[in-house]
Each structure stands twice: as C-alpha cells, then as structure tokens.
Image (cartoon, rainbow, N blue to C red; front, side, top):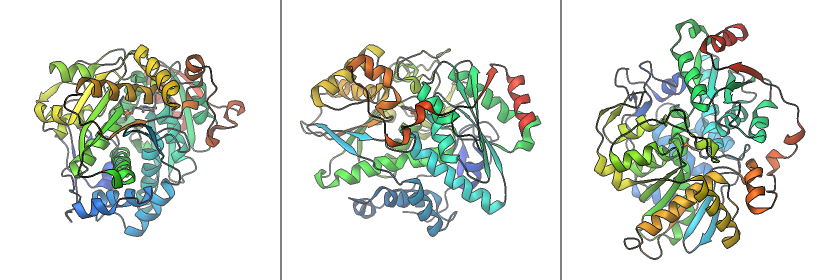
Length: 457
Ligand SMILES: *Cc1c(COP(=O)(O)O)cnc(C)c1O
C-alpha cells in the first residue's frame, strides 16, 4: 500500500492532473479525455487475505480507501459504502467450480446500481462540502439511466437529465426512470444510443451551457469506474476458502467496457486473475481489434437482444488502451500502440451472436435450473467458448465466475419466448407495470436539446 495521493490524468494527455474529487465532479477532462488514476495502488497480500469472508461494504471500503486516500475521511467513506451497498450479492453455483455472480439484486436490478449508488453519494459528499449544485447529463441504453435516476433521486445538490433511445429500452427499464420525477427529468430521443451519447458529449463541449455546471454520470465518470472493481474482490473473498494460490477466470458481458475496466484495475491492484473474458454481442469491434490489431467503430451500432451492450465504440476503450501504455482519441484512432502482448495475456475477447446467446440462455436454465437474461447469457456463452477453446491449457477444476448484469425480470419477453416461464419480479420492481410515467420526446438534433436545457435550468 502506498500513502501517496493518487492524481487523475486525462487519456488525451492535454489536461492537468486533478484530485479524485475534481475528476468526479468534472466527468470528462477539459481536453475531452477520460480520467485515469496516475498510479494504481498495490494491495498488500495480507490485506487481500484479510478480505476473505468479509461483507461487501467492508471490502468496498478497503478498496475505495486505497484510491481516495487523503480526499475523504474514514468515517464519511464508511457511511457512504454502508449506505450504498445495502443489498445481497449472491454467488450462484452452476457446475464444477463455475459460478455466476448475481449483480442483479440492487434497487434497479442491474449491476449499474453498484457504480451509480457509490458515485451519487460521493458526488453529494463533495458538492455539499463545496456548497455547489450540479446538473447530471446521462445517455442510457436502458440500465444506466434507471440506475442513475434511482441512485440520485432526492439528492439535494444534484439534478439529473437522462436521454434514452426511444426504441432500444424495454418498457420496464423505461418505467424505472420515468416514474420517479422530483429532481429527475427523462428524455426519449428519436435516435440510437450512440446519438444520445453524442448529444451529451456536445453539451459538455458547449460554452453556452457553462452556467449549468454540467457533469456526466455515464461510465466515463471515474466515480463510476472505481466502484466496479469492488465486486471482483468480493467474489474472490467469498470463495477464498476454496482458493489455494490459484488464479480466477472472470467473464464479463461488455458494452462500454466500464465493468471490465473495473476488473482490470482489480487485477493491477493484486487480485489473482488468470483471464478476463470479455463477451460482446454482435457489436464485435473489440474482438475484431484483438484478432487483427485493427480497430474500427461500428456506426450505427447493431441491434441485439442484449440491448445494453449495443455499442459500436465503447467509451472506456480509451482507458483500456491507456492502461496498456497506448493512446486512443475520442473517435477511436489509436495514436500510440498499447502493449498488445500484455493485453492478450490478460484478456480474451469474443463476440457472441444473438442465436448463441439464446441457445445458451435456454441450456443454462434447462440443464442447471439457473435463470439468466440475454446479457448474462452472453457472458456465460463467452466463458463456455473460452473453456472449450483452451481446454488443454486449463486445469480440470479451474474456478470461473461469470457476471450476471441484470435481473431476468428486466427482460420478460425474451425469457417468456425462450423458456415459456414468467420471471419472478424482484421486490424493487413490483408495482412498476401500472405506475404513472412522465417524460419528454425530442428529435435527434443538438440545437433542440440545448434549448431544452436552457429553458428548464
Ligand atoms: C451496461 C450493461 C452492460 C455493459 O456494461 P459495460 O460496463 O458498459 O461494458 C452489460 N449488461 C447490462 C445488463 C448492462 O446494463
């Protein structure tokens, strides 16, 4: 462990290093790059061992404290993690030593709750300290928006505007956002997720909106990224008594790669990980990059059943490249090559078709009684493909953990069609189907969006 305060640099390399608090409230760096820690704290082996069997919030505290040293008091951080992580994180056994970590038990039944709840409370903490208010702009393909809306709902110093692509979120995902009101405003955009993201990015660069004190809560915010390293440690800690110096495999269904970036940070901190499998849907720009060394964005992104992963240019890709010593600009041009050999050592990237996703979803339920949904099923399919492909190199009893990123009840149509059953609603979602909604509709036009903000804030 180091006591040096960590500063955060921009992946575009043309902005000053800032504290965590500043990076958190800024969102995007002034040169439009993404903030990254300038060094990654190494976790002492004994501290890692001491995490075994600990509750989630205690593990979150230890990891967060390493990144936030000198920026927040121990007491404040302890109460933030306790308040943020007040729900279960089950590790579901599937077969042999293969598990599914269910990140779907939070208030919006999505893994994005983990990052959003922590980020909201950290932002509220720093804003209150500085007596400031802020307007959060977020683009969502479904789960981000509901997680952000719920995580920020009722926070005094924060107002929130969320854009979603009108045809790419499920009715329940929409209702998790549109039934809140108070400090939360929702926009249905006539466009795709990438269009939503583009409007948000333009607003951040627009000087005429400077007085609104804009910030982002997308996966580009460093406050979203760090909490996504906690659950990798937690998974390890829960199974620690069965782990004997062995390295774990994680499979991560991926869209914007924030989830996977959290895992890469955990590994750099010292978590013994053998491999990260990143499973994308048919938006395969990253698996293709891993195979060929050529990165090409997919515009427009392809519509797949794992809708939260319909991303043609993952916003965290610049961070992944930067972590391996390279540089990538916002457009996806690689301006300095990363250490590809090391990337391949750590990561196996695979694209999973919709057909394969549904086949695996079905098999997993019929074979093991384990109910997944399209995102988690893509991750599980990626794991199966990896185990099949490298079976000669993998010990028979290898520990592998797939992340289930959403509750099956968020995708009832797929589950109903494929399995003929009705997924049971988690308590957080009962009553939603009949609740009153409130949202605005906008065309995919930046000038309209800008005026919308100016009139209301
Ligand atoms: C957001 C999301 C993903 C993708 O996560 P990234 O961090 O963007 O890679 C996967 N599954 C679900 C259900 C999601 O909501």
